[in-house]
Image (cartoon, rainbow, N blue to C red; front, side, top):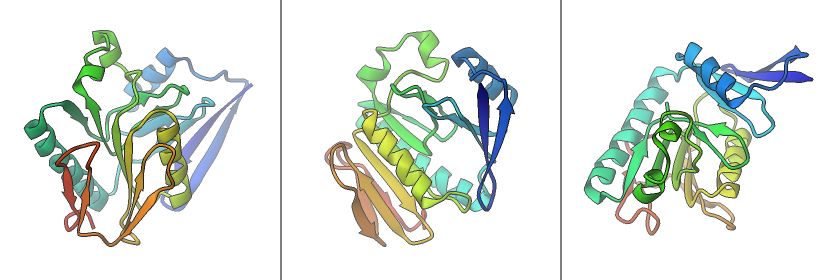
Length: 201
């Protein structure tokens, strides 16, 4: 049995195989992430561990802006909770994913136990945003967005800064492609939420 580590570099992922090591249990993966807090770590549905470096400074600034806009709307709307890129969620397929920004309806979040909330919560966000960085391939992010949809996400945005394009994902629909939009709207799923793109590009 082999555990695979996928280490994301600036140019491409680096695959490291660890022969005869069984896939990490949920608790082992949690402990591994706790011991490597400076890294963004995800796990695929098949148990492969994906290690990503800290975001470059310009991407970190854009992520901050994303979270700020979502926070303002979340406080005004009051129907859910927002999460930043350091948050991990365990999807129904077993993958642990950390979108760049996420939002969950309050009643769904409040249905979790305190222990579940304090770990990689076993819940699929209602809304996710992925912001493509220099080290991300578009195809890998598109696959991740499809995984989100298959696991219950209601609305997803994939933002490709390089090409000034936003892909809007909804369940059982082909992605909607917006080229160089000034504003992206979350209606109707996130009524009234809009993201001005000037500080994201």
